[in-house]
Structure formats: C-alpha cells, structure tokens
Image (cartoon, rainbow, N blue to C red):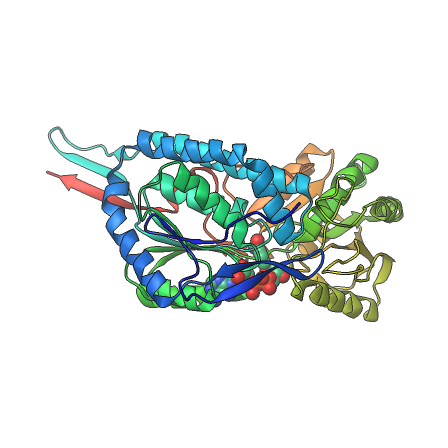
Length: 475
Ligand code: NAD
C-alpha cells in the first residue's frame, strides 16, 4: 500500500502547495525512509490565514447552530467513508497499527457528531430580578483559535479541538505536527468537502516555533489550544501572556496504576498489557507506574512478562502486528536512556529493553522494583515501558500515586467499592479510571491538573473552552 495523501495547506478556502514554499520530508517510522514531502507555510501564508479567519468570524459565529452542526455531521460522514485512506495514511506516518488507526478515525468522526448536537443544547441563564428588570448571562464564541497538536493521536486530538471550536462558532487555524501532516490534511479535506465556509477552518503545516509565535502575536487569535509536552506548553503560555490570549493546555502525564490484591488478576493483566503497549506507549494517559500490592506482586510480574512476550512488533499495515514502531527518531533513544538509567539504579529488567530491528522500533519492556530516584519514575517515558513497584498499605500507595508534579490520568483495579470511591476522591489527576481504561470519550471532560495543564477537552466543558461569558443587566 502506497502513501496516497496529497499534502497541502488549506487557507481561505483554497488548497495550496509548491509555489516556492520549502518542502520537508515525511518519514515512515517502520523504515526511517521519506515517503512524501510536505510544503511549509510562509509568513505570507500565515498572514493570509489570519486575515481570512478575521473575515470569517462574524458570519460563522452568527451562523445558525443547525447549519454549523450539519456541516460538522457531514464532515464526520465523509471521514467514515474515507476511513481506509485516512487510517493507512496515519499508520504510514506515525506507525500505529491499522486497527488502532481505524479506531482513531471513528473516534474523531464521533467527536464531530457529538459537538454538532451539543451546541444545540448550549444554554445561557436568566437571574432572579424584580418584575420588569432582566439580568441574563450569555455565552459567545471566543473568536479565532490557533491549535497545536502532537503526533501520537494526530487525528483524534486535532478533532477534539477543531470540532468543539467550530461548533462553538470559532474559526480555527491549525498547525499539525510535522511528523503526521497527512492525517490533518485528510481531516481538513473532509471539512472542505462538507462545505465549511472560506476562512473558517485553515491548516498550516510548518516549523512549530515560527507558526506559534506568528499566530499568537497576532491580535486576531483569541484562544490557543495546545496538546504536547509540559515544556512547550509553558513556552506557549508565556507567549500568550503578552497578548492576554486564553489557553487550554493538555500536557504530559505519568499515570499511576494501583493494583490491589482483591482484583481479578488474570482479567486485570488481560486489560493492562494491551493498554500499556497501545500506540507503543506514546499516549499521554498511558498506564505507566504500576503499583502492585505485595501479595500479588510476583504473580503480576510473571503474568505481565508472559503476555509481553506475545506482543508481535512490526509494520502496522500487516494484520498480525500488535505494536508498531515509535513515531520518530527521538523516541527510541530517549526511551533507551531512561531504561539504562533505571537498571543502573537497581531496577530489574524482566522483558524487552532494546531497540528493535530497523526504523524506530523498541521492544515492549517491563521493569520491576524501580526506585523513585530513577528518571523513568519522574519523567514521562512516552514509549512501550511499564515500570513497577510493590506496595503494602492504601495510604502508602496514594502518597506514591500523588508524588509527581503530573496529574493527568490515574487507574486502579479493585473490587472494593469503598476503596474505589476513596481513590476517586484522593488521587490528584484530571481523570480516574477504576477497573477501566475508557476515560477519553466524547461526552466527558478530559484534561489535567498540576503540570499536566488545565482546561478540558470533550464534554460540555470542551465547548465552553471556546466561549466567553457576558452578563447583561437591564433595569
Ligand atoms: P515536543 O515537546 O517537542 O513537541 C510536542 C508537540 O508540540 C509536537 O507536536 C511539536 O511539533 C509541538 N511543538 C513543539 N514546539 C512547539 C512550539 N514552539 N509551538 C507549537 N508547537 C510546538 O515533544 P516531542 O519530542 O514531539 O515529544 C516528546 C514529549 O512530549 C513526550 O515524551 C511527551 O512527554 C510529550 N508529548 C505529550 C503528548 C500529549 O498527548 N500530552 C503528545 C506528544 C508528546
């Protein structure tokens, strides 16, 4: 299967490429070979996109919600029709297996459908006042939005931002990651073919710093939504401070998984091992720190190791592959260094630990008895590595779960209802999954606390993040 996406920018309703723009390689992580070239936006392109968004805003924000919703629903339908093409592009650019790529396309289409409906039920309120007086609170679209998304879920994370912003009545200018430009191009093609008006949805490929600093410095952009690392998030927040631009920051995580001795261990292992190696561990809510109650720790390690040996790595386009390569050349080196550091500090390597053959492959890895001083216990591994430690008491494991500055997702496996409730209340994170990993869903807020950022995507909170409120008082 070849790479079929025609990589272009989409500005003011027109597809653009060539015309003197620099072209950069898109690399297949299975082979490390270039498979396409993507045109990079120029300063003139960004200025054109900003001017177009500025022009499009008044009309789009005033467009009837039924009409906005109909365009979003049509884009979702086209996305589903084109699932084979979009998923193949995703797998070839990013490495995840085709089944995961297809699930990502379907999840993205669902976000468009969900926000198309949610905006219809987005109400303001009136306040209690004496007869003849009126005080009301209304919500209005914040204005043109700049989105910056990462390569690990290049369609889904883009859809989370774009679907909510468009539903709320905001035009968007999106900068996708340079690793996965084709997924974003295909998504915007669905919007274009669904009839999105000129200037409402715009896509600019290119150099991250140049695009973010140019867009944020413009008074046109009223909101920035970023998903990526905590360091880049802090940098963008500083840029936004100068123009008082609102931000949503969905940043890194280091999810603890609390496994208690009353869980069904075999069932738990059947869930946690595939979840750990989904997308080769490059997931901001990936289960990472496994804290296992002492009585079942050895059985957990044995079961985890046996299941890990069966995870077949290879080209994600091939049917029996269970885990593809990492997405870019940076990741295998970074993951390898973290493992070396952990074993030097006393961790036991029970599975994997090495790069795979060719491309950017890395073996599924399990580390046991990892001390808190190891870098991997403090820094997001963002790769196929599970780290584990035993624990004795409830208080001890809650303290361990909360010891990092991150707070995105946390998971627990237990059959004890009271303990489950307490975990939900006490763990410092934006999302908690108890006996489940299904925490990224269209109708619930998704976002972090502490260094994992702030603001929510998904649910009605996701819509509100593209709105401002106004109180209107009439005597
Ligand atoms: P990075 O921090 O360099 O980049 C993260 C994303 O932000 C990329 O898509 C990148 O293109 C973009 N970016 C970088 N600089 C930018 C700028 N100045 N303006 C706008 N966008 C910018 O990280 P990376 O090397 O791609 O990944 C490394 C780490 O990032 C991972 O280990 C992980 O901790 C984190 N990460 C988190 C998520 C998430 O979903 N929260 C996703 C991807 C990466």
